[in-house]
Image 1 (cartoon, rainbow, N blue to C red):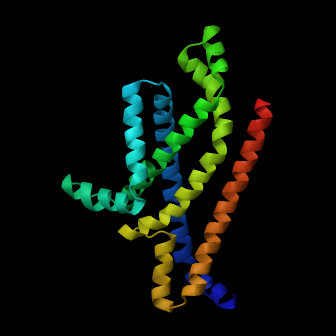
Image 2: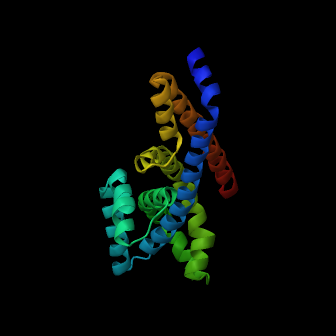
Image 3: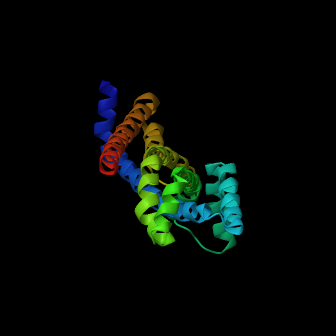
Length: 220
């Protein structure tokens, strides 16, 4: 424990910089993935065969490719092929957004389908347009169903940021590796990294439970 505290004090700037990079990468990716997932999930719920097939292919392909392979494909494959030099952070965001977006698409599609068909039909029967029925009736109820799954995916994406260190992004894990390279104190350093992740994930879980409780109260 004393060694861990000493290492933190001596390397706090590097560790905190890595933590901030991890949080920034996770937050940007989760926001973009949520937007992508909601759009594709709603499109898939329209039950238009061509659109549904396109979304299904996207989801199946992305979920079938390991995130590390996807990251290498984007950073080392597509980027040079197009003659574009992508910043490491941008490549990381794109990889995490596509990966998480595929899973969130299925969460949204399942949440919308879980809402009673009768309520959808009732909303249309009283003169609501499709967009109004989705915004006022379907999505608020679906959100309550989807929230726990959203949080689970956000936690997974936060953990997945460590994979982006493979292309050189100085996030928390890579910062830790550099410290280990200097100090050879692998156990204390990786214990610190585990504690950082545990704290952040615990806070995220607490916020999610609070939101879920408030959503239940507002809807019920």
